[in-house]
Image (cartoon, rainbow, N blue to C red; front, side):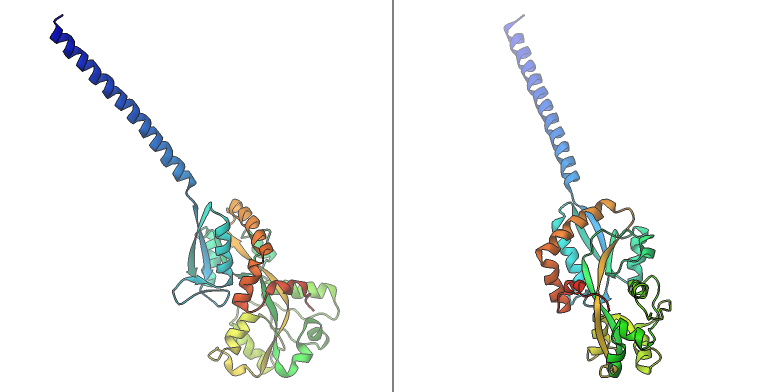
Length: 294
């Protein structure tokens, strides 16, 4: 073989080796890149749609910036901080759609001052731990506060309570009182009605007490432009105690609910939940749990 031919063959062989090396390394790089992308994808937080009612100030509402706000939303934001594996996407909607959407799976969780009831637990997943406390009490005529402003007072004086729907957590409070006490409160049941009508019924004497929550009374009666502001001097709100409130999970969200349970324990123990209660309600509602309904 001629010397020139040997040189050409040597060059070709070198090129093949280099090209093969580049291909091999490139393949490794490609595999590493694919592996890296796959890992990054698996580390990506799972998006959780959090539905909240937009008209329940100061519990859940939209602020001036059209952002979700209120105690329930704020506490969910704190939970979000504790769970890096999830990313919360807040969706403002109607009261009814919160329930319908969570049931269907459109939303993974919903918030709107929700009380636990056995009836709701058949359809939705309740976590083990509550995340808030609702200031619950009677709206009575101011002149009859001493006569009807309490469970025992209403029962003793044979007062009439605005009927409560069985699926409402307040129904359970009255039912529990009746099991343990005599005389009992006449506990009728009713479907949904307009709250402002119930306030008018009490004022007119049709009923003697309406089981409500403080924020509702403040918004409708005590605010200057409230729907029932004309009844401010005629009606009074009396706190009876605190009812625990929960986020409502879709039935398939067991893993998420378990993660929530761990996070909310830390938040409540840190005092952050009480701090948010003070901010939105003007008082630490968690202290009401030490006050038995009577």
